Image 1: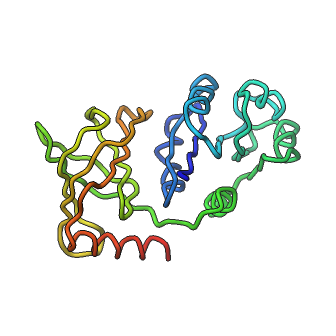
Image 2: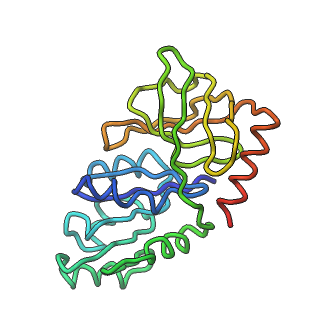
Length: 217
């Protein structure tokens, strides 16, 4: 089952700096800047983990649970700006974890533990879309069966088209036909799409197998 993570922060720059930590095998990452956005994502998606920069809206853990009406795991990245008692309400509640500055690699390690998945090396590469009008996007996660891509233009779910991309440190271009399987608007004036590969050449399959092996080491 696909893991879904929501990053929560009122500062948009948080998503630019931090979402690279959470793009890994089997994880979709979304962003929320307020409680309404967070609640909407949790209502629409099977969110397994919320990672918040500070205590969301300054609420203690019981009050936040009441507002959300659900119980995903919570990881709070605390700082000196947060009220110590409020942080304690998360740290002392089952299903919630607090990490205080300096975070270092503990964010990745804790997320890996909470989601019970292996770390996948971050992959960001340029992808060419052979659609009407052409275009390019950035791949954020790739596997043998598909990829998560971010681009400025809009695509329609269900659309099929060829794409081309080159994997890091692996010679040769990969050419596949992809179908738009899902879509979610990003907070960076862009769109994220989950693409499912419909057909892959034998050469492309071998290259994807190589990146899949490297990414799980």
